[in-house]
Amino acid sequence: MLRASIPAGLAVATAIVAVSAVAQNDVSDVEGAFDRTPQDCILVSSIDETDAVDDQNLIFHMRGNKVFRNTLPRKCPGLERENRIAYEARNSRLCSIDTITVLEQRFGVGLQGGFTCRLGEFVPLSPAEVEDLDVQEREGRRGRRGIAAQPVDNKTEAEAVDPAPAEDAAPADAAAPAEEVATSQ
Image (cartoon, rainbow, N blue to C red; front, side, top):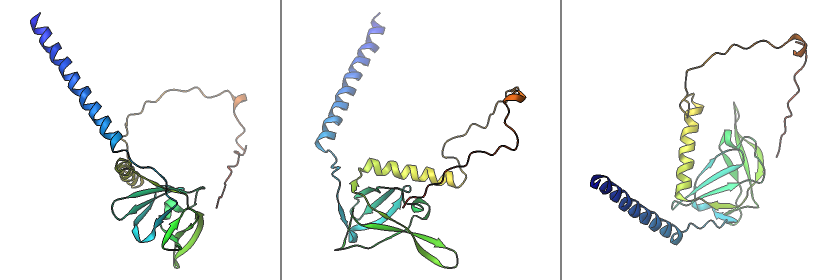
């Protein structure tokens, strides 16, 4: 009986230590809370690099390790694919009222202006969010190169399926509904 109570006592003591450590981490997180106040403008001279996450989100990597996400009010076609932009800055600042132009690679011509889109506010990203974006980007690159980002199980099971009765089948010459294609600017 004594042997059973010693491990139980150790488990309780370990649990108490773990809970106090978690509580201390929570307090330090509150004290060093990350400021998420959006900014209307950033200094152009501080921009180190930009990266398009998708057709509506740009990441601005700044000198001094600050990082901002800019969510455009609307999708900007070609932004993610081209991942190159041009902008005109007034007073050495890039602001939420300004626009960017997607630079498209055209064979034989070089870079040409594509869609022009308005920027949104510049929202600061925490170091943890930046790390998550980096991981997603690396996984995305592997996926685009044909290497799966997630493990794939190559086992497949075949199941016999009875064909649908002839009366439920659609005629072979029936046209499929057309897809809507929307272009936004």
